[in-house]
Image 1 (cartoon, rainbow, N blue to C red):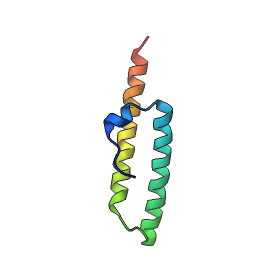
Image 2 (cartoon, one colour):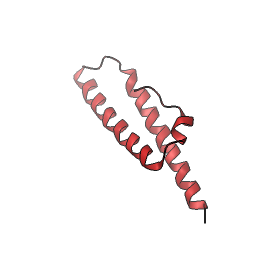
Image 3 (spheres, rainbow, N blue to C red):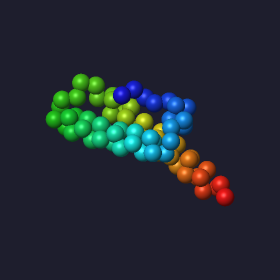
Length: 71
């Protein structure tokens, strides 16, 4: 999984973002587990996934704030 660009993420719906978030968290869990066992070929992927999760959460929060402001 490569880093997602915020511009691309903003075009997704809330449901799609939630699904992407769930998949990213699952992948992070697996990578952390493998890292403890010493089986990770690219340990920098953990950092990339964590940043993707942060991006997704930020965009979800933005979308929720916009939704609350609309009457």
